[in-house]
Length: 390
Image (cartoon, rainbow, N blue to C red; front, side, top):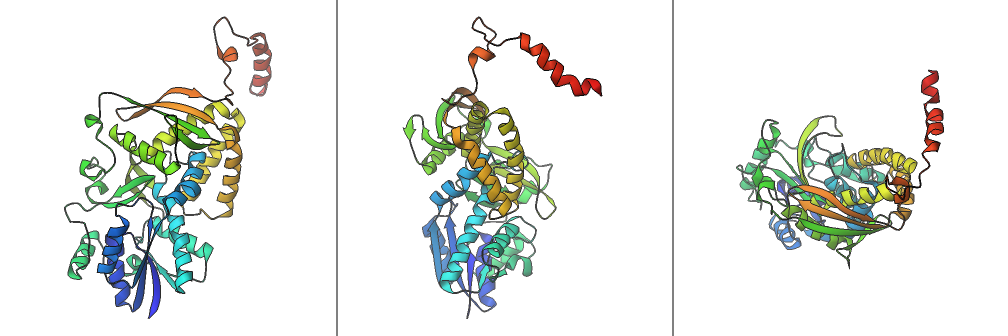
């Protein structure tokens, strides 16, 4: 039998993919990346075996995800269309990389995934596979089969006794990892409907959050968070702490009509409390430690960087080049930012850095002011010259 390595999430699409590929004559080997999924490794193995796969690999990639994907994006303050922290988009190239590695290990000529025919993830995974090994053949059952809706997939799964945990009453597509959750489908496809509270996983409704704020102090070293509330901690632990704290205060919800790579607009609901807290803290630290021109150009680079990540071009030359520039900017992004978390808001309580370019004796309007105001007149004359001449 022909071998195919399937990127398996345990969700509805990939559960149906297993049976469909088997009926096409393939020996299905599953690969699941633990990036902080809604399913545990034990659940994934049990579900895959119940579906009749010959072998399943479950790899805990959370630390690699944090160090090699999330933190580089954090250094860039990567936000797609200003509001999406790229949680799912960052995970896809890592999943595709291991999909290729396992295909090589198993001597499989095919890889497969459960991405939809009009989504972003098909672009991200297919493109990454083609970059890393153009000889591998890619099968995307959802682009080929006759199941035209999630309702029809549910019927297919029930008919073939596939293990699924979804109902027609709660029919959202959920993708979860440690950087955030993506929610789509169901009643939220109608832009007139407010997000369904039942769909949220990490965050409380702001009406149900505590009436007392929490404060969190995050210390960065060269753009990477290394301590929280004075205690040294690995990135994975810091993200976990902030996810719980942020969720408690209703922080990190986004309701976005975004532009997909394939050209359509789509409504996406996101939860990412830890990501929003860390990005805010990092931005505040950069505002002190980066000079004006570097900060301005970095914002331009971050915009393009975010678009490339969203499109699945993680391994492209341009993204690697932008990453090298961003890495250079982080040389002195070291210090601490204290934040107040309250009723869905993140506000700054204090900022400290030995590399701060803010000088009180130049900024103050008090007695210790050392700024020479006489210089301002000449500066303005030169600055406004081209506009006056025009």
